[in-house]
Length: 129
Image (cartoon, rainbow, N blue to C red; front, side, top):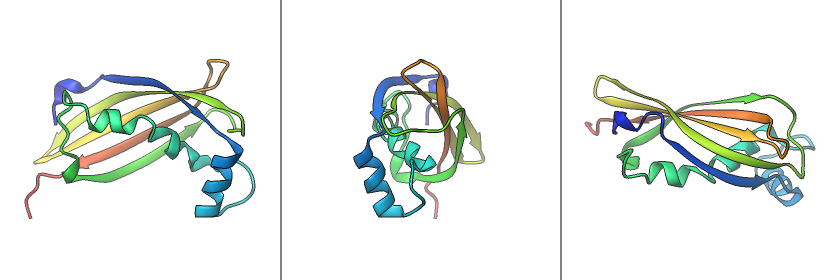
């Protein structure tokens, strides 16, 4: 992984929280009525292919495991929200032979205000073992 890629930005892309998306999500994962807070994961996947496929980042996704996921909500999510999703490589760190990549995605509503922030840490294992 290329540490010089820290700070790289991706997007924006648009993600609409539709009734169909909510219904499909709830059919798959269950939960109470309403927009599930983890639907933001689907919004993240609108940008992740650009990030993990970025040759400047040089991430070997075959060696990646998911480290952590954190969501910070600024307001409730609603059906009909059209979120603008932008990503930033927040940090790239090396610990031993493993690389730690943290990506921060900001989701803004139509009014331009931040609705939520998602932070995901991926670990690129050294390949040994």
